[in-house]
Length: 64
Image 1 (cartoon, rainbow, N blue to C red):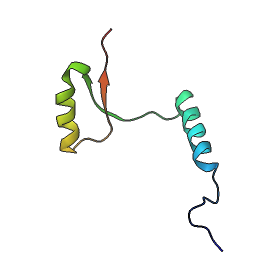
Image 2 (cartoon, one colour):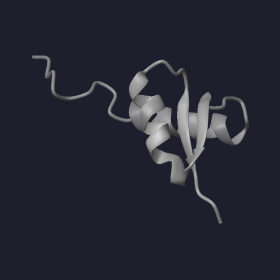
Image 3 (spheres, one colour):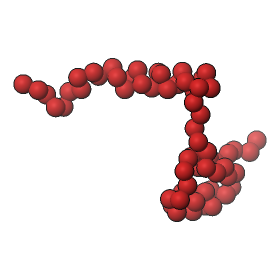
């Protein structure tokens, strides 16, 4: 009997994450950044996010 609650390859999500981290570390892939905002402009960033017209990540930066 097939158990639908048990993954046939439980290690697969872990391996995917390991692979993705490796790609990022080797600069083989990079996230797409739609906009960058300083943390103080979090409300503007949220407005852009809620419009759902962006493609990529909305990044908040922290000032030193």
